[in-house]
Image 1 (cartoon, rainbow over the protein chains, first blue to last red):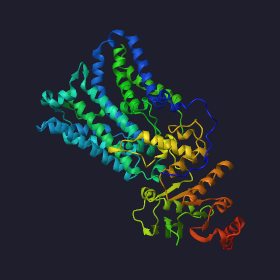
Image 2: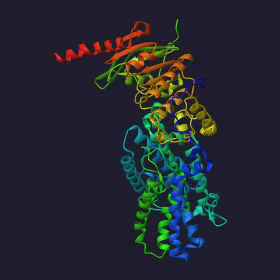
Image 3: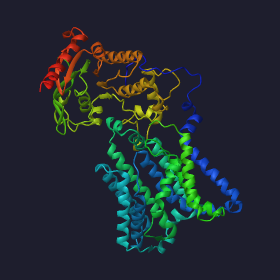
Image 4: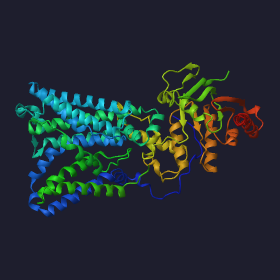
Amino acid sequence: MSEISTSPVVTGGALSPRPHPAERPLGRFVVANRASIGSLSVFLVMLAIFFVANPRVFSSWGLYASILTTLPVAIFMAVPLVFIVTAGEIDLSFPATMGATSLAFAYVVQAGYDPSLAIVAAVFVGVLLGFGIGALVVYAGLSSLVATLGMNFMLRGLILIATQSKSIALPGLADTWVSRVFSSSVFGIPAQFLWAVGFVVFCILLYTRHRFGAQVHIVGDNPDSANEMGINVKLVRVKVFAFMGLGAALAGVFSTMINFTWWPTSGDGYLLPVIAAVFVGGTPPWGGIGTVLGGAIGALTVSFIQTGVVGAGMSGFYVQFFYGLIVILSLLGHRWNQTRYR
Amino acid sequence: MVDRLIELRNIKKSFGSVYALGGVNLHVDQGEVLGLLGDNGAGKSTLIKILSGVLKPTSGDILIRGKPVSNWNPARSRASGIETVFQDRALAVQQSIVRNIFMGRELAGRFGWLDIDKEISEARRLMREIGFTSEVFSPHSIVGQLSGGERQGVAIARAILKQANLIVLDEPTTALSLTETAKVFHFVRQVRASGRSILFIGHNIHHVYDIADRFVVIDRGHSVLEKNKNEVASAQDLINFMEDVAKPRALEDLSV
């Protein structure tokens, strides 16, 4: 360590009698989690409005249990997408990756192997696809927006060609230990949701207390500086796409285990809601910062809109309008809530 | 015999058909302050980027303590004890001070989990050393909130985190106030007193003359002058020389 003692190189500014807010534990928590606290407020306000509109429907546990069963599928993709957006990239290919990984899962189960092996296969395919897509974007120097859009079409096309657009029923899945562990319920709480909570906690730690998360932030903030300081910028970028592939694989596995059926459209409907979830959650689109917890809350908010609108007694035609309203209001809220340094 | 820390031999760098460096020789000895001078476009920044591993030379050798290096890149440059404070400071402005100080050199334990407590206490110590005396900023403060001089402080703190053998300061006094400039000078003398080396790049010839033990002037990709301080009478000598270097070619260009 350095033994140099120097007189000040910089001036510190006026002496303050109170410690900086970033130094007080509560202050630091609020500052660090400003965006997720904001997203949570949006969700609670929305919930309150729905509740007032139809107290009977929104006080029944069944409604929440059904949301908590399907929500994890969105969470497994929204959270890795926070890493991608923080790294200054975007991925539009995860719906097709979810389709491909769940197809791998279905094939292995159909062939009579243990479902746990099918999960390993799905995760392997997901990470491999993620690496491939990442390498294509990073090493060929393509725009991730356009390249992943192309990959999404191509991969979905391959899935349709390979399966002739036929679904695969997996009735044998119902009585396996894997299905009991991953899609039963514990004291009325769907197991999927508990796994998703575990995943979110792990990802928060990865994002804030791991070298990978630290380098993702720096690469998204200033890739030139990251390179000058010896960070392998390209490798970090490829890794976030591989991580996205892992998330899409988990989403594919959980979604297939809910229905015991693989659909050729598996993943299709998730593109826009998952992207909306990331931004509703408070991760800004310019890279360098973001919030994993916010992304999960954003997924909750977005997943809730459809059920909420119908449950509140409005016609399904209102759903899209509310999607848009929530996205715009959240962006306005976060804009006011965050200081932009670049 | 002085200890030769780093040597660049006949470094050439071309971008397409344009030669930025046409064969530069440069060395830095242990414990000296080398001043690198040159006009805009002389190739100073290109040379610094090669030294820090950001750019690969088209040809030429880099020797660390007499041994040629291979697969030169920023990580290897830093691992060989070369720390660069870039002109733009190379900071990630949306990140905290501590994340910037440990950029590319995160303190991680098993499986890559960060030792955040140790990073914070190290950052606090470095911030004290370089003079963040006030309580306004903490290691958690976001760099985007800091002034230019304070950001320079963070970049310097990062450079002295490890015992660097050579600290490269690229235009460290540009856009700094007089007092901040004096502090940078003080820092340079401290580093030299501790037996380590500085490569000081500057536009302001008076600044470079005041601080350096030896001068190298490069012009249009070539080193055109190398003198010890005792061979140069005054900063005006250096200015006259640089104007002489610039003049004849300018006239040649005009006489086409």
